[in-house]
Amino acid sequence: MKYLLSNIKININEKIYLKDPESSDLGKRIIENSIYLIDTIGFDGFTFKKLGEKIGSNESSIYRYFESKHMLLVYLTSWYWTWLEYQLVLSTNNIEDNKLKLEKAIAVLTQTTTIDSAFSHIDEVILKQIVINEYSKSYLTKEVDNENKEGYFAVYKRLVNRLKDMIVDVDVSYKYPLTLASTVIEGAMHQHFLKNHFQSITECSQGLQPTDFFKDLVFNILTHK
Amino acid sequence: MKYLLSNIKININEKIYLKDPESSDLGKRIIENSIYLIDTIGFDGFTFKKLGEKIGSNESSIYRYFESKHMLLVYLTSWYWTWLEYQLVLSTNNIEDNKLKLEKAIAVLTQTTTIDSAFSHIDEVILKQIVINEYSKSYLTKEVDNENKEGYFAVYKRLVNRLKDMIVDVDVSYKYPLTLASTVIEGAMHQHFLKNHFQSITECSQGLQPTDFFKDLVFNILTHK
DNA sequence: GCAAATATTATAGTATTACTATTAATACTA
DNA sequence: TAGTATTAATAGTAATACTATAATATTTGC
Image 1 (cartoon, chains in turn yellow, brown, orange, cyan):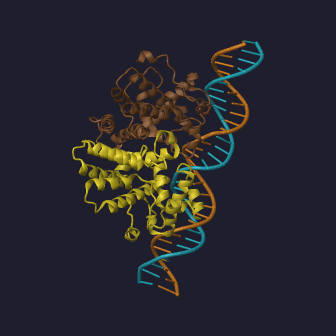
Image 2 (cartoon, chains in turn brown, green, cyan, yellow; image 1 turned 180 degrees about the vertical axis):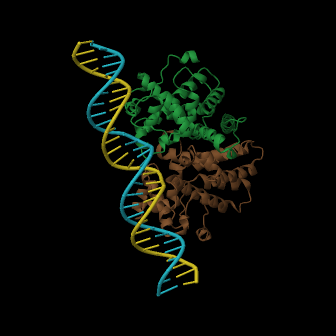
Image 3 (tube, rainbow over the protein chains, first blue to last red; image 1 turned 90 degrees about the vertical axis):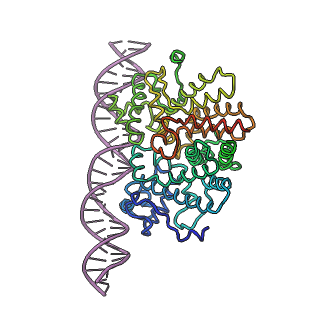
């Protein structure tokens, strides 16, 4: 899979950045190190000034790539969802059996990322942590409707729709395929968070993964129709 | 129910505030108006200075009640979950049939709040909106583990446990009662958000409520065991 | 190989935020 | 009426989230 991916570029909505970070060395350093820095100090404590210090560059240079730290978060999470969509398609592409296909899809979408792919300057494992801890901050804002119109959340919505399609393929009669799909994707992130910080309100742990719960959930809902 | 509640005081963990806002007129004005102001401008844009202007008081006076705006959010959401827990207990108390009881519980926990209760200075309907839009910001922080130890999220966790108990009463054999309970409570908030801002990834709308989806989900999971 | 264009860096500056500290005014209580 | 607690007013601080501008480096096009 690494080999397959190595010449692929993840395309991000051009409205999200001022200058494409993939187009320069500085841009790539911004992306690579913002992932580490946000993971370490959290998005709330993260500033372009601190990032500038970390990469030995200037705050003002970073502003030439992203309008604000909010837009950088939108970029990073869009990148992640695009990458995950790619993983999803690669993993389910040739599966004929609809149930097996859905099972695989749930696994890809709900498990912790362990794959370190061919995108050398991006650490997907840590990026997933950022998505778990910070993604909702990108849309829980007063600007969400405008930003949604600009297409900032398009990839995420497309991913939910892909899962929905696979749910429908398994059971056309099920009344809430979209709601189930969005619940699985968001719910998995939430369970990963609970596993790490509020263990008393989930069975999920090292031994039992969110994936196990969601597979059980979805197939019990669908097959008993 | 209004009558029943009228002499009840919602008790909040004393570590959350510096001075009990229920103990003074200014305190109550802080709570009442912070709810309206956060709903209007969002938690990110909310400041104690703006709140001071709104209530004709001084920024520094508000700081005598709450250490920071973060702690005010923790207070408001703790108040909401305590109030919801009370609603839950009142609504399910005398129901003998475990299935009916669980059904009622899911309804209370996942529906939009329409009840305007006896707590005159707190608008629960708007407070619920704040919980939907801002609650996750109270725990998606680097301080979450310390604050969790201080008991800031205790009511929320207790609520999840109450729902779990009712799930177990309906089906002891089900393997993930806690994960299901936390998924229902958090998932419902998420669906309300999607309904308002990302309608394309949920069937939920004016006609179809998150409650319908979650009742269907839970009873399909449990009864077919 | 050199000028022009572009990218990056450095410096400075601004309004706002999220507070803290201090003092003054007011209200309530013994 | 004095003492105490509460609230208000004012000032100040370090940091944030930027913007603007000039200087320097780097790339590229001919």
